Amino acid sequence: MEFVQFHPTAFWSPEGETFLITEALRGEGAILKLSDGSPFMEQYHPKGNLAPRDIVSRAIDNELKSRGEKFCWLDATAIPKEKLLKHFPYIDSRLRERGIDFSREPIPVAPAAHYFCGGVISTIEGVTDIRNLFAAGEVACTGLHGANRLASNSLLEALVVAYNAANHPSMDDDVQFPNIPSWRLMGDFNANEWVIISHN
Image (cartoon, rainbow, N blue to C red; front, side, top):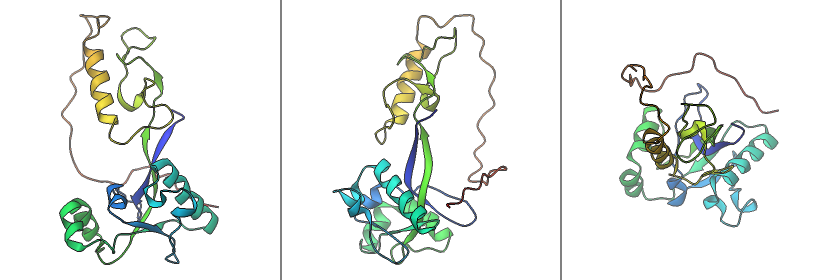
């Protein structure tokens, strides 16, 4: 589990409640800025704000640590409001719940742990070296991603490997599966045990 992918732009709030701000917003022209309003991504990568997420995450982390700040700003105010509302209604809704109109003001963001790139060594059939233990998704290290993964590939990999595992010949017919209760969808909540991380 040593490879953890960070999403560069998670909504930051002092209460700790967070959600991802899609990278598509930067694709439409939103710009990462420091507390003084200056953009900074051009000094880290030729593609600037369109750099890959691992580079953007490290750039933000470096700027925050070197300045002793907790977040930077994602400024989408140059994008026409109609376009923002059409393409990003979920973000608009979530931000308005917090009193932010992202067509008029920047969004406070910081990198957040997003995806574990493996752990249990397994094949693309989900087979591990322990009899009847199959692994898929973030817990599996299938070799498909390496130290980082491309966007939008995690669900596909999990489905394919899980399907392969379920249909693998070594799956014993006598394996008993527990009766798992239905998922209870209750929305966002604060974790009972927060590990507070502060930048030196």
